[in-house]
Image (cartoon, rainbow, N blue to C red; front, side, top):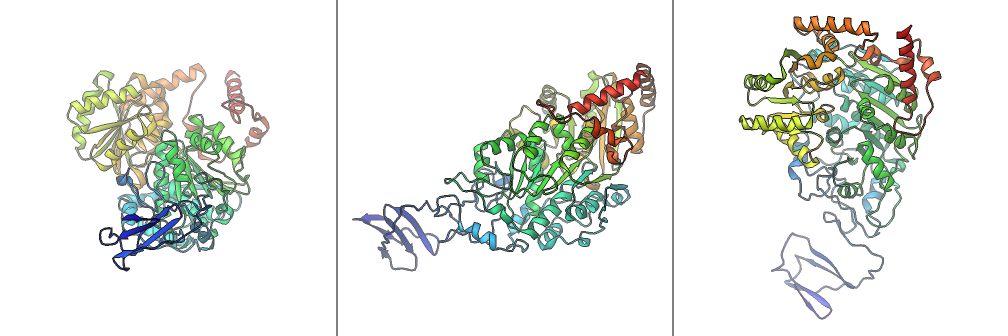
Length: 623
């Protein structure tokens, strides 16, 4: 290639490349195109008026700026990190690109206009590589039939009947195809009830065991509705200068941690396969610039942690004007982590449609009083769904509690690891970050392939540790509580509580990492005098799950309960409250009357309730 005067000359023999359009170059006022079927030397000059045109960047598109496919596909798995792949619906951190630049200079392309006219209920062309990436790891579990015995209670007005099969409700061709690819043979108990409720456009508050299929329970019906209704007004996003496009997701899923957000996003990619819906994910601890660039390529379903979403909204990158579906997953955990101000900012103080117009769903393994009060603010005429005993553990998990002094824990751990087998995935929980690092170093020097995850590790290190654990390269993962909630790691055979947590709900969530979705699992906990505060609750959990109870634990529980009653206080796990709809209790009206109004500060919206409840409780005990 060389220049001759004001013209560009292309040697098609030396510059030969892909068939068809060889090169597309904008040079001053010359637009030069060379086609391989033309003679060896070609001089083709096209004078154009370039003022007002933007840079053509749709590298996989044609002349009109539209991609070759009817819609993008989810290229670029985690194995492709740091590689560019086009038509990528991976979230921030995937380094994929879906170039949407057009001639308008506003970040738009003809894809937007075409998408409005497309039938979103029809599947797009399949992609074998992507299909293998998304669905190759599916596993329904070997003990799934026992889930039919789990009791379910639904309360609320005009509750839709539950389903027994995915075919009992119309979810459309795309969803049914992806259910088949996921090898889902039948819905889990929470899915049997939640799917028809959500499809009926009712608000929902659902309590279900960890690992019971909660994520699919809301993603399947929500995406089905989006495919049926299409994008609506959400695609008519406001356009600013190029690269500053504001996105208006149709659905928003809030999650407490980066790990859970990524897992929900990965599931969303599965059920959005062969659709025109583009999932995105934003979370703290990662490059916000990359996340912004990913959002600018389009976002229909957004998975986010509350803090990062507020940041994006304040930067003008996200608008919630057309958010028709709001999901709060692990809502109790979000409140525990202090996210209530951000949640209320997102839901109540911005442009999100109010309750009654949007559809709102809450999912969690536990729902204490504070969450039920919060539900009244966010949900309209909702249905309360309790699957099994809320906060209970699965009978698929064999629980062992052993007395181990602090000085003997490491040697006892080595005995357990030797008995488990080198290839079995084992999750070891400790209480402190320092303890996680120290135990990882100890196991490494003992010859075990292990890694660790805790709050002080960078996002890249955390993701790499989880990848090594899932793949089996490091079958032992030492973790603090940051990894206890929401992690969806298949085939964890053994959970070891090297340090027991201080409250029983944390224990439930920790051991819930094994025995997921019907698989059998083992949980071993080291107990000593430091753990006396959860003795009674731990005993209740073991008895309820029909587990073997050590005689020494029964004696300690009786002794601890006797001492507690003498002091005038006795905590019972969940109090039974989370397992039922508080609207059905005789005192539910008093909650509304006594609830303190909102105030400024970190606990606005429920701090007054806690104070009132605690004050009432003290009065009762004194009397």
